[in-house]
Image (tube, rainbow, N blue to C red; front, side):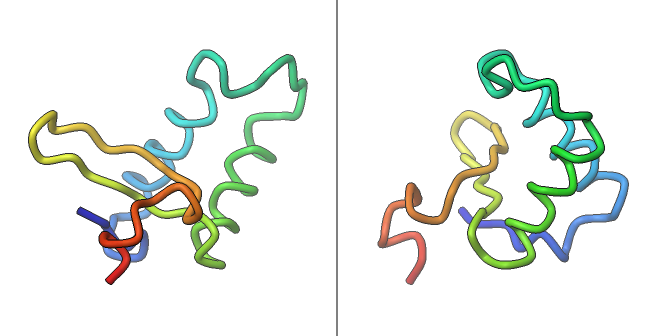
Length: 75
């Protein structure tokens, strides 16, 4: 299930993005400040390059590049 980012409260969206950019394996040694990484993800959401995906079975929410989202979810 796709969740439109603009339907989330601002604080909730920020916490979701911060969780995503601070997960192990997402920085790959990148020393970019947290605020910059958060802003990049926010811009990707705003431009439609990234999407918020909620998996009801696992109750997990994640961010995905649009190109990685199954086509049938986009219809």
